[in-house]
Amino acid sequence: MHELSWNIRRHRGRTAILWSLALTCAHASAAEISLAPTNMPRIGSVDERFQSYNVEMVEVTGGPFWKPYGMPASDSHRELFSQRKPKDLGNVRLRSLAAALSPAFMRVSGTWANATYFTESDDAPTTPPAGFKTVLTKHEWQGVIDFSRAVDAPIVTSFAVSAGTRDAAGVWMPEQARELLAATRSMGGRIAAVEFMNEPDSVAIAGAPERYDAAAYARDFAVFSRFMKQEAPEVMILGPGTSGGSSDAAPFVAAASGVDAVSYHYYGAVSARCGRQETPEAALSEAWLSRTDERLASYRTLRDRFAPGKPIWLTETAETACGGNPWSATFLDTFRYLDQLGRLAKAGVQVVMHNTLAASDYGLLDEQSFLPRPNYWAALLWRRLMGTTVLDSGVPIEIGLHVYAHCQRGSAGGVTLLAINNDRNHARTLTLPDASDRYTLDAVALQDEAVRMNGRTLSLENGNRLPRLTGVKMAAGPMTLAPATITFLTIPEAGNRACR
Image (cartoon, rainbow, N blue to C red):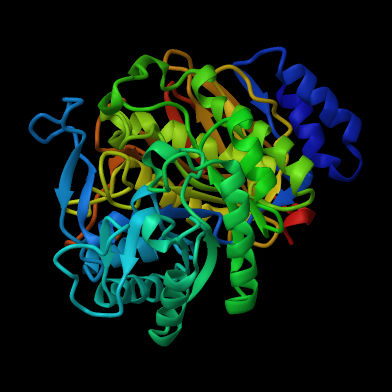
C-alpha cells in the first residue's frame, strides 16, 4: 500500500492507471485508504454562499416557535411551542459569530411568514389586520436589514399569502410584497432571492386558504412571477420551496415555471416534539445519512423534467423538523451536518440553508446566550477550509467512512479533505503522499454539547472572540482516524491544477 502511494507521488503526470489500481487495492481493506490529492479532478463548484442559514420570520416579529426541550413540559405534544420576543439582531456576539460564517445568505421566511402583515409603521397594531396572524413592523425589518449588511448575508425571503392578501375571487394580490420590496430599498437592504411562499404542499400549516392546491398555486405563482419581473428583475426567483417527496412536490415544481433556481426543503424525519423520534443510535447510520441523497434525487428528477438546467437550492434543512431532537444541539448531529454539506456539494446543489442560526434545539447557536454549539464550530471550519471548487476524492462512500474533497480556501493549488468516520467502534487509516494540517473534531461523549478540536475544547475567548483554529502538522504517510470522529485535512502543497 505505502509503496504504491509513493509511486503515485513520484509520477504524478502519468499515473491514471496506477491511481486506479491504488483505489482497487485500498478498497480491498475498508480500514485503510490511500489518496492522491494532486490528481483529484474537478467535478463541479458551489455558490460562494453555499453554507447559509435561516432566521425564522417569527424570530423577527416575536411569537410562538418550537419549545426547547429544557423548558417545562417541552416533551408534551400539547405544548409544542413557547413564546419568543423579537430577537435582538443587534447583539454583538450574534453578529460577530454570524459574520464569521460569511459570505452567506440569510433566509427570513418559514411557516409564520405566510400570514405576516408588513406595516410601514414602527408600531405593531394590537391586532393583526383581517386575514393575517402576525405583524412585521418597519423597525423590525430595519433590524433584519442592518444585520444582513453587518454580517454580509443578503436576504432570501418569501411573501405573505394568507387570506388578507387575496381579492374576492381568492387570487393573490402583490400589494404587501410591493410594500416590503419598496421599504427594503429605502432602508438600504438587499433581497437576493425570493420564494413565493413557504412550503405550498403543507397547506394544513402553511397559512394559505383552505383547500389550497397545486392549481391555485400555479395561478398565484404566475401573478407573482410577472410581478417580480416588473418590480424587482434583479431578484432571483426560487421555487417551489416544497417539503414533501416527489409525488407531493411534482405538481408544485411544474407550477413554478420560470424559476431561476429550484428550491426544496428537507428533514429526514420529525422530532420527538412532534410525536416521532429517531433514536440516537441511528444518528450515525448509513441509512440515516443517505436520506439526503434520496430526497435530492427526487428533486433532481423533477428539476430535469420541469426546469432543465436550473440550479438547485436547499433552502431549509436540519436534523429533524419541529425544532430538532434533544441531541441536535450536540456533537452527535455534527456528523449529519457536515456529511450533508459534503454530499450536496458533490451532487451540485448550489446553496444549503440550515434551520436555524439561533432558535430552538437545531440552532447553530444557543438562542439565549448565542454561544456556539458543535454544529457552529463545524460550520466555521467548513467556511474557513473548504473552497467552492468540488473535487472527486476517488473514494466511494464506504460503510463507516466518507471522504469529501474541495480546493482549499485561500491556497492556490491546495486541497482540503473532509474525512468522516461515522463508525462508532472502528478506526480507519488514510495515507497521504504530502504533509497536511489536521483538524479533528470529537467529544468526550457523542451527546455532549461541547466539542473538541485536536483534543482542546472549543469555546469563545474574552466573551465574544473566536479562538485561533490551528491545525496539527502531519507528515506524509498513514494517519489514524479514531472511531466517531470528523477530520479536516488541508494540503496546501498538493499542487492540484484544478485549484490554481
